[in-house]
Image (cartoon, rainbow, N blue to C red):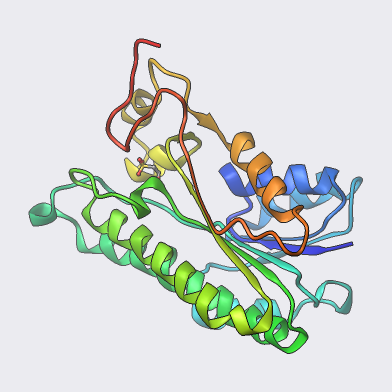
Length: 250
Ligand code: 8X3
């Protein structure tokens, strides 16, 4: 039974992935900031698989290392790391962007991913095995109006993914990036700070991806034979051509 650690497991892609992998009997470590939601998910999924949860904020370096080193023996060998936690904060031109939003995106999407990886990598390099999946975005592959810092943070995720693949090649560790387009989750609600009308509008008039679609793909990626590494995957809804070109007449 392989052990998978998922960050950002309280909602969206992370939660859908936890649900699917539990059904496929992966041993799970679900991580997030919101204790009650994590505990409810943990008890729901415990009927399918062995599961534990860790409450921490990926941007809090000390609590990342403390939480991961506190894992009980049964869960301490992590085979697969899914760096999913990430957020967008604001959608503003660079000249009027909010510096707190910039900090949040760089701290969570870039530094948080690095801290969690750093806390887990030594055991993978020691065992010479492991698989890391970084969830990027179409924003990792292109820059769109007002996306500036969010796109930069996701471009960094892409660069870090490539760098990890190079540096970990000698250890037989698989590294891959999955880059979703528009997925109907709380993503836009967070980006627009609770403005649900504006958030709903993003996904109106076409069929966006669902969190479950990406969970399916993650399951496919981690269930390939050892010699197959899906290194880089961009996933769009059929209606979407780029981050900003969406056909609402399909
Ligand atoms: C989410 C996709 O287009 O809102 O990362 O940047 S987009």
